[in-house]
Image (cartoon, rainbow, N blue to C red):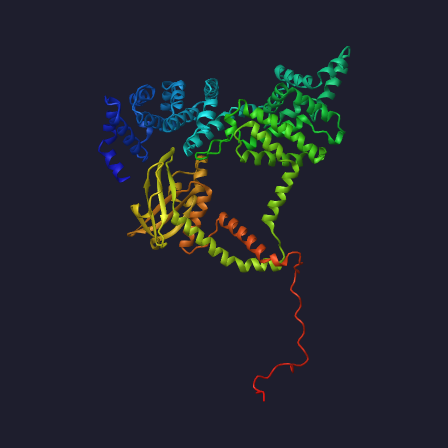
Length: 607
């Protein structure tokens, strides 16, 4: 920071800008100038909005050129991404100057760094666009087969998928699913001729032959009565189906799903409706009500309409392996719902219970991240109602254990020993060390640093490392912090680097992973700030640092580890008591004998 402030105060940025804007060298000198410019700007002392339009246009030229040094274009793309995220006005300029086709060209170059930076700029441009522009851009990208390319050459490439690319794929998935939000928030309009026709098409696809035979020569009132009866057979709660679709969410998105199912799987649709029409009234599975509730459920599981997280990487490979993935997922889900309904022998009163089971089936299968829709279909159909009950029972046994007082007393006696074991594991984990990513207030960073605890548990050692490099040895780390100088451990909003960022929604994820160590540096208080790569690493490090400071380890991970160890140790101690009932209370102590003449007098010597 001190060096950057000094360089910037001596017009260093202006000199670098001159090299980038006016220089004739398109090789190493330009790459070094761009890298240095980025490093200085990312300290946050100068706003990206202060960059001149000619400078930005020159960097755009480097992105649009064909024959360039391979190290220049990733840096130019990275610079444009930062500008796009920080300045809406310059972001519009970049959007107009950098064609989407050019970014598609960069994505198709088999250079992982160039692909990642091109994807970063693409997602930044999409995030900065208006909803209408975003829809137009995404439609164009899908027409140019971006989805197929991502699925074949990025997700299933030989090289492992980096964290940053995984984040950008998550953002692309989130923005694409976000296009469904307007339909999800719009109720059915009873005066819309188009929507009335769509409802009639849904009815006719299920009862076409029956409707034709019964409706011939009937009066208008009789025909209306017949239509109302058929809509009730379809599973609508009201004779006027528009009233069911006034609820938002899911609004018109539920109608879109039902129409998609009836048109792309007509035999499955007809079988679903007719099969349930012929069942007893109490046991029929209502198609329309189920579809509306399933659409709400899918929107919740896939976070449709929710803002993108700054750090999440939770994308689904299946999403990029299928056109119309949301509607296709609905088609699988509605058939699963009918199958589960039959397995549960459910009635209308059990509707909510069935939906809870379906939610669990879909959530468990999505968590496995199947690579294709067919694999998803196979796995979710294998997760039957009986299997869900078995999994629930197993989890309940693991979580609850036995609550008999003697067992609780045994667990309390075991706790100190097991907490010592957990403490030892945490300190060993700190000795192994962890790579932490530096994250600024504007964007994800590529810079990494490594921190570990010395084997004698007296010094924290840390230093910067390069992307992709092996973790350094403790002796190679330049910086040291004696544990004896540490004052306190801070987490979440108490950390100075989180307080500086503010309390916006976008910082919520960072806040949950942030922790700091305050220590004495001379007469001043200084801080060593961390952003954990995952929630588990956050728990391990905060537990380990708490153990070093003599504080209790109170993380969720410690609670889970202690519970698991207590369960295992208790079972081992009780192996010999299998099938022996354990009483709630200890047996009573018998009364003392009437005399103690049975005692042996040791003072009398035998003859």
